[in-house]
Amino acid sequence: AEFIQPTDQMRISFEIADSDFNDVSEAVIDYFRVFDNPTNATQTLDPAAYRLAVAPNPATERFQLHYELDESLRGATLRLLNVLGQTVEEHPLAGAAGSVSLGQSLEPGVYFLQLLHEGRAAASLKLVKQ
Image (tube, rainbow, N blue to C red):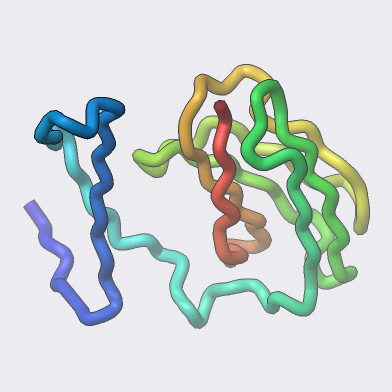
């Protein structure tokens, strides 16, 4: 197996909660994977070339994403990932501006939305489905 060399830029956090404040909370991690994401600082999209806005977030039924893209990002795609990094939805963007409905069929949880263009990605937006 290959291993990723730890760096000062890596962060891992776990949060547990229990509604019974008189009880000690415990947590078990059954499955934990770390990926060396091929998207790095030299491969990120210029933040001035796009604008993304999601509402509502958190959402109970669906998210509505409004986007504006520079001409340089024609043919971009939206990718929605679950917390395991698996793609759960992809949406090609047809125009320079528009709106896309996301997450209608998703289970409650945390998801990450990426804007992709020619192998480069924008910073992820965190979406919460309740």
